[in-house]
Amino acid sequence: MSEPDGRSPLARRLLPHGEEPDPRFTLANERTFLAWMRTALAFVAGGVAVEAFTNDFMPEVWRRVVAVLVVLTGLVISVMAGARWLSVERSMRSGRPLPVPLLVPLLCGTGAVASIVTVLMIATLNR
Image (cartoon, rainbow, N blue to C red; front, side, top):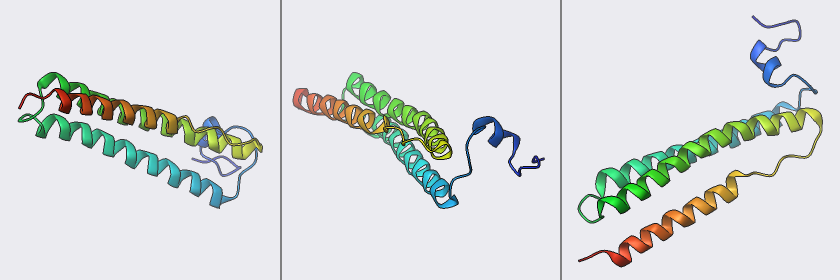
């Protein structure tokens, strides 16, 4: 179901302009995307683990805040990873500079907030 140029309808729709980049760069972009997806899955699993395994020593409100924050971070990372993959691919095809990765400050900020909430929870925990 490909056209005379050998590209699928989805490829023509998502990447309509520019020239095919060196396949090594496209594959490197895909590996980066997959690394971000592994990170997103790790955040989701971490949020589930916080909710499932910290009942004995974390108050419910703290547990929920940390778990939801961590799972939502995984969701945002996965969405932004797809957007970044597409943005980088379009930049390579059009010869423009690569975009700044917004995922990095997001990940740093959310990790810091989750850590602060966890530290506050530990500091206020009644033993």
